[in-house]
Length: 91
Image (cartoon, rainbow, N blue to C red; front, side):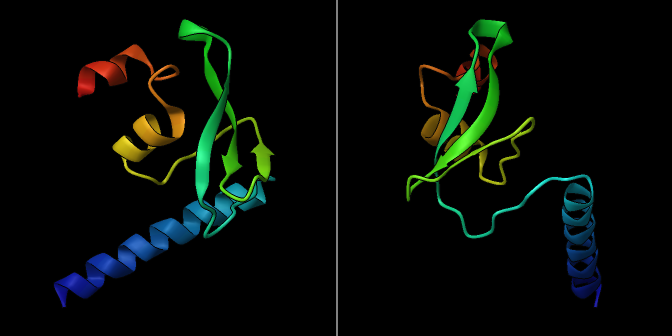
């Protein structure tokens, strides 16, 4: 029964986060295969500004949230050239 309570709480948190994002004008695209995180700026001023999906669609926004693992996010979608120094040290 404890496992079921844990799962129920996790689902509630996810629903609340998604609802909050959408209530504030954000958009969530489900089952989207992100190929690349788009960035602007250099060094400390670099920031994520959007994503490119595997089908070529591009979404831009003020905030980009990744639900992927740290390795997929920084190593696969962002790449070595754009990876923050802190993440390079994490390896």
